[in-house]
Image (cartoon, rainbow, N blue to C red; front, top):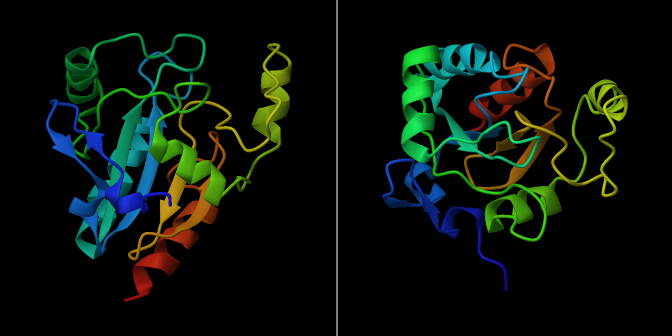
Length: 182
């Protein structure tokens, strides 16, 4: 039997053992992040979203991944420093993981299985084809900054394409709907 999302072992970016259980009862936005991607400026909107909705019960959780064109080459310490100094990130970051392929982390295996289709998927996927990137499995994470929305009770309730930014009305509406559920 597969572990519940909250029970999957994780490591915080400082190396401490962790899991999503620490965030039980919160609405979670899980994002695979990268420091050297054209989408990296999304850190600003993610931090703003975190600061604006944290008191309402939202946690933004960043998972660095180097799966896409080597756009997250740094060590955990380098990633933490970059996020702090370049984007003043305060939302929790986790140790670098793989979000697809043979070494896919169990968290991302569970997320993509439970929510195989992303809202807003299409335009960015088409752009990537122009660069020769065309994933065979449509359920795979497409690129950096794909977002998964998890309800307070640990269910995956949404998935958003990489170019759906943190201030996109579709994402904000989905977050607000989950925050309204007690």
